[in-house]
Image 1: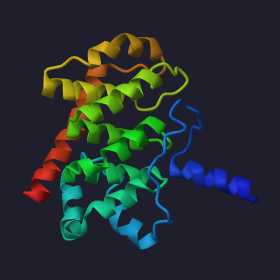
Image 2: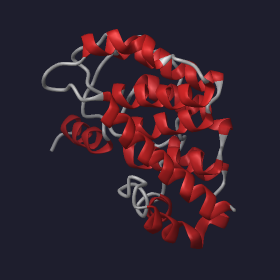
Image 3: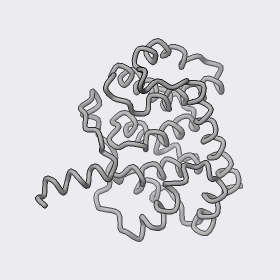
Image 4: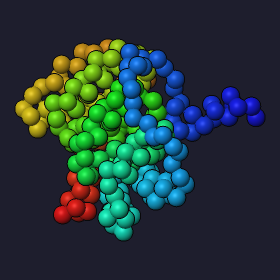
Length: 216
């Protein structure tokens, strides 16, 4: 196997399944200087990335014996790895720990959309933080990706995240994107935003339960 083919397989496994150039290409994103060690991934990623946070009891059970070791450095290492599995766990931990200092890391990751699946975690975290800065990241994401009809990434999660913050803040930012969303969606990819929000809400409630149980 030549090096080019090997690299393509590695990128696909990491979640870079759709290569695209965007207006966010030049944004500098957070990236680890060294590759994560297998023992680190085994401890901090493997037990958590497939739970999708709805299996809250199992998540809590796995977190309990190591939560004293969980800190900002661990989270940044997860977010700085080029893999959807580590990044989504980093987003989950950011939400659980209310680690707002990584908001820009997560916001830029969302805008660049380098790997699949992780965007759901980013949207959950930004909605949980509910800051003006985080909401702007969600809006910038929708401003661009709702105009890209060939890209079906995390538009529904971003819409749900805005609805979540709208309900907290008494605003109507999500409604401003309904026409764009309607134009972007198609028969193949359209999904009722109501059911999308219910799924998003369920995940957020799971994260809040983990946060309350693990840190209170």
